[in-house]
Image (cartoon, rainbow, N blue to C red; front, side):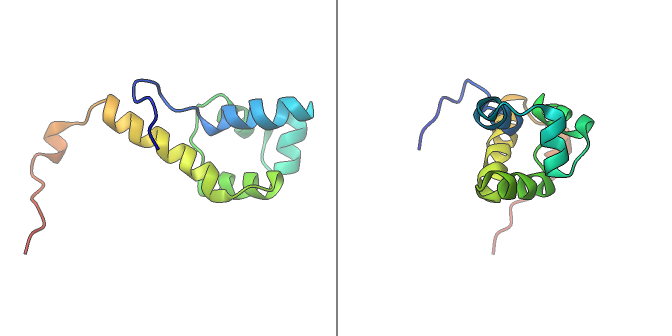
Length: 101
């Protein structure tokens, strides 16, 4: 599976908003109540300010009849993209040695 590496993957919060909440005409307050999280927490998630945690992925999987893994995979794609595009702190990793026999 190949994807454009120059574009940051879509945050799972945006997927929730565009593919679930908007089609169902569900607002953030109702969705938060159904998911068992605060409105503020869900708003932060939808707006991409916080990552998709295992807890949120589990809640979303149960609420949308999808897999927890699919939500976590979306977050992992973002984490990998950010690692590749935002650079790394070379000093932090300079002393790491290869694990060889």
